[in-house]
Image (cartoon, rainbow, N blue to C red; front, top):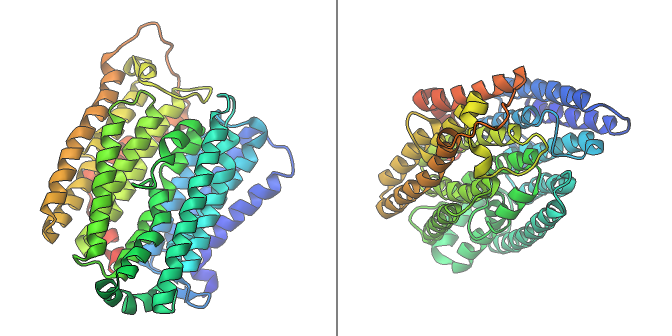
Length: 472
């Protein structure tokens, strides 16, 4: 049984192991990238083949089900796209290229472990495996003064604080229930939430680590500086994959807590509103695109939380669909940032001027990505928001949906500002950007995926509903 249901983890561990042995020698960047892509592609195939498998392992702390396997596919796909996005690794010190890819694989491995964790301490250990790898690679950036060191320190300090608060909350939960298994907590925690205020505090404290990964209020302060200070490739990873893992574990935990118009629901609703308002209004005044996307991610975390706190099939499936779309749209934006900064420098609105003439494909990819994040039909972002809001309305959260729609209107301003800079502020003196064949294929993939999944969401939505059915 271990050989069949554990194959995605084994494949990703082998990827990490091969890259580890490569760090003992000297290899060219092209070789490192080729090996990384091949290994990630093999892992992706194995992970897709594992869909439909089920089982419990390691004294029932590790569950393989539809939900875990779907998220493993998304995480491994994201890792493959990040490897492909960073071909050349222009923003990373050349002597560290092999180590960089190895630590990315370790971080993804931690998130894969997190996908199947159904026990509190196992969740925490998986989360820390992913986080520690990122603590190492954020300062790997080449040049750019000492901003990358500051970014690494901030990420580490906020990570340590969130871990401490989460452990504190877990100690409360264990004290109240005498168990750390989610299956047993499902039977005990809902009753305690209704009668014990301490249970509500404990749940919120445990969620702190997941809020940190999602860059959700009030654990969002690290995001703008880390996005800006880390290399473009690293920021693309930090901005997407950890958030996928955090959404999964929040889904599991909210379903265990039995959220149904309780104090926990109101706490999560307030956090969602604060994330949307703070993220969107802060993004309005940004000129650095990575800082803008950081504040944008804070707002998107609020949208996802609306789906999660409904605690029913429609809302949770919408949250799963939304985070898949978020990964594609955000990586599409970072693909553009990476390709218009050949030396790995940060990108501002001025750098977008004339992009439609310099590289029509990059301009179109940026346009489709920001339209998706703004929720313009028929993109995957529009369909994601539509389903999240529909699920919340079905649950009776009318005020929350109205606030979210108003925030989406605010967000449309700065997203369309990016598109306007690329298409309307032409500069004839700028050099044409020549993309290699692989980069052209990748840009085309992002454009088609964002539009086609938004126009025909049935298969992804069906997979999301099947996945969340294991929670309800």
